[in-house]
Length: 89
Image: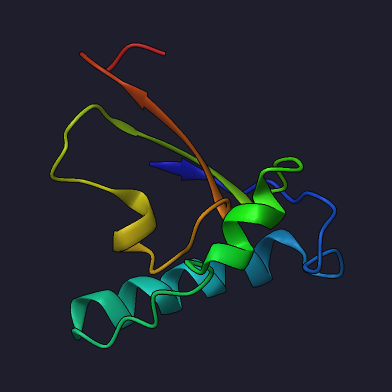
């Protein structure tokens, strides 16, 4: 389960459908072992230290085997991940 939420950033012209397509494409790359591993450089770490501007909010379980950033082939700061246990929100 996830919710797409747009924030101002270099993706500011993307609507929810575009972001969802981007996440689905990233998941396809992951499942085909063709992940790009974007936004994982030291420059990205410096950029995100100035503030958060994720393109999507992901609500997921507290299971260490389910890292959304990897499953959707996203990088540092691309997703705002909320983990919950016991299906409680």
